[in-house]
Amino acid sequence: MFAKIGDRIVVTGHRMGKPDRHCVVLEVRHDNGEPPYMVQWDDSERQDLYFPGSDATVVSGDGK
Image (cartoon, rainbow, N blue to C red):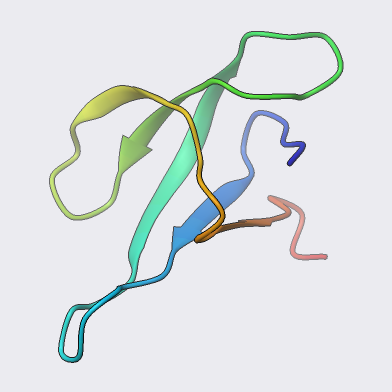
Protein backbone atom coordinates (compact mmCIF):
# COMPACT_ATOMS: atom_id res chain seq x y z
CA MET A 1 0.00 0.00 0.00
CA PHE A 2 1.18 3.49 -0.86
CA ALA A 3 -0.44 6.79 0.15
CA LYS A 4 0.28 10.49 0.27
CA ILE A 5 -0.96 13.32 2.45
CA GLY A 6 -4.61 14.05 1.71
CA ASP A 7 -5.44 10.54 0.52
CA ARG A 8 -8.31 8.76 2.20
CA ILE A 9 -8.21 5.21 3.54
CA VAL A 10 -11.33 3.05 3.69
CA VAL A 11 -11.31 0.09 6.08
CA THR A 12 -14.00 -2.48 5.27
CA GLY A 13 -16.33 -3.54 8.08
CA HIS A 14 -15.88 -7.21 9.00
CA ARG A 15 -19.28 -8.08 10.41
CA MET A 16 -22.79 -7.68 9.07
CA GLY A 17 -24.06 -4.27 10.05
CA LYS A 18 -20.58 -3.03 10.88
CA PRO A 19 -19.93 0.09 8.77
CA ASP A 20 -16.74 0.84 6.89
CA ARG A 21 -14.36 3.26 8.60
CA HIS A 22 -12.79 6.20 6.81
CA CYS A 23 -9.75 8.32 7.61
CA VAL A 24 -7.59 10.94 5.94
CA VAL A 25 -3.80 10.68 5.76
CA LEU A 26 -2.18 13.58 7.65
CA GLU A 27 1.44 12.42 7.58
CA VAL A 28 3.46 9.85 5.63
CA ARG A 29 6.51 8.59 7.51
CA HIS A 30 8.43 7.17 4.51
CA ASP A 31 9.48 8.99 1.34
CA ASN A 32 8.13 6.18 -0.84
CA GLY A 33 4.60 6.38 0.64
CA GLU A 34 4.68 3.11 2.58
CA PRO A 35 2.98 2.75 6.00
CA PRO A 36 2.66 3.66 8.77
CA TYR A 37 0.56 6.80 8.37
CA MET A 38 -0.68 9.41 10.81
CA VAL A 39 -4.41 9.55 10.11
CA GLN A 40 -7.53 11.26 11.38
CA TRP A 41 -10.63 9.07 11.65
CA ASP A 42 -13.90 10.55 10.35
CA ASP A 43 -16.11 8.93 13.00
CA SER A 44 -14.22 10.22 16.05
CA GLU A 45 -11.80 12.87 14.71
CA ARG A 46 -9.14 10.95 16.66
CA GLN A 47 -5.61 10.97 15.26
CA ASP A 48 -3.63 7.71 15.28
CA LEU A 49 -0.53 6.14 13.83
CA TYR A 50 -2.06 3.56 11.50
CA PHE A 51 -0.56 0.38 10.05
CA PRO A 52 -3.14 -0.69 7.42
CA GLY A 53 -4.10 -4.32 6.95
CA SER A 54 -5.46 -6.20 3.96
CA ASP A 55 -8.93 -4.75 4.65
CA ALA A 56 -7.77 -1.20 3.84
CA THR A 57 -7.93 0.59 0.49
CA VAL A 58 -6.42 3.96 -0.47
CA VAL A 59 -8.58 6.47 -2.30
CA SER A 60 -6.52 9.24 -3.87
CA GLY A 61 -7.08 12.67 -2.36
CA ASP A 62 -7.43 14.11 -5.86
CA GLY A 63 -10.42 11.85 -6.55
CA LYS A 64 -8.62 9.38 -8.84
